[in-house]
Length: 173
View 1 (cartoon, rainbow, N blue to C red):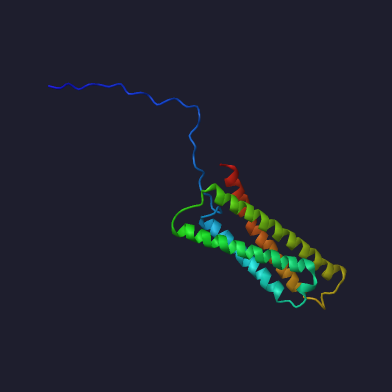
View 2 (cartoon, rainbow, N blue to C red; view 1 turned 30 degrees about the horizontal axis):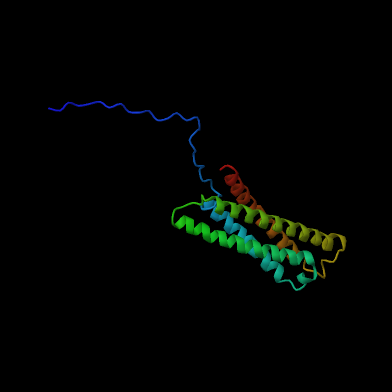
């Protein structure tokens, strides 16, 4: 007859390090529905600004307006690319957790938001100069310039939370 034997079990080694916990995906981060919404808002505002500015006949005569067209063109391309990536992530039910991808998004959002904000500020300054100081709105397209500039500011307002959330998720790793 065999008898049951009790074998001693070694205890797990004591560690002083706290276990790493993954950060919860907040809405607005890449791969979430909030992130997709922000990307689509960025894209729509940038495209509207681009279309309104390019339909005026005299925008190439002012460097700030050309800069605005270039900046919102880059913003619309960047936002559309990341919106497609967000749609893919939502369709396969995954989120972006790779450090390289999140850092690329944070750097890209930082660059495009800085360019869009600088272009919108320059265009706003020229629009105020034309409208208020020179009082030449009757021969220029001031309302279109103002509309394009305000859409560029709205695009910048939409990209700012994306940048901050990407940067925060990168810094909290």
